[in-house]
Length: 161
Image (cartoon, rainbow, N blue to C red):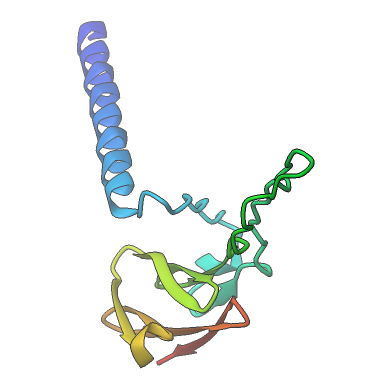
């Protein structure tokens, strides 16, 4: 009896380890390598309640600055380059999944859009990339997130059908 329990326990441990490895590998292949991983919502998070819509707090600015060039007396400094444009990001979570929108200046991108289990996702770009629509759809429900860059910051609207 003890041998049977030990064998069963060994099979469960190996199967669990393989499942976690496969899930982790699949997840890393789905996300854009330049995108940051998004924490999984907690069970008490309102985003896990059917029919709810949440958005992330206002985006933070990622700015890189360099020290001004120095030059010896009597020499000219190299011409200064234009300042780097910082990226602003916004994470939108709906019952059907999560999508991240990024504005770099007026350029809008979607680093990732991940559907929840049982949902599918579709991305559409219009106005030459000035507007992006992400739709999460299941057999019974659909969420549509539309995003544009406003002064370099993602602005989104969410509709539920």
